[in-house]
Length: 134
Image (cartoon, rainbow, N blue to C red):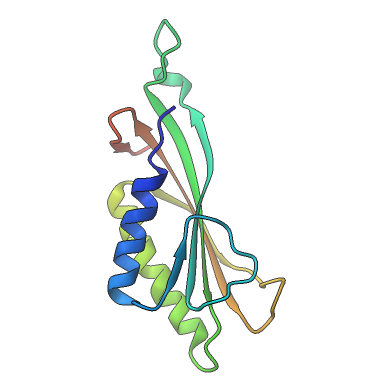
């Protein structure tokens, strides 16, 4: 299986911490963050990209998708903070070759005072860990 999740999470985490040293960044979904701002980075799907499977059914590429949730609970400026972090994430993911499939605000079910932005990305990744445009 082609697996780039650790590289993606590490790269995003490092970049987010450069701009937001106190941010809580995790590779798992967090329904109720204990610390803010919070960014959860979750690989949602990793499927064989059938177009490039060879005659012995060897996987050469995978179609991967990620869901990233950005949470802020600032009393003033939570929307601005969440949007700024989302823009940073978006720039990084697009630079890696991922395509943004969706970006939306969602109510946070556990606490309505939390501002939440959800972004989904997808890309084709080769067994050499190179990201290709779909």
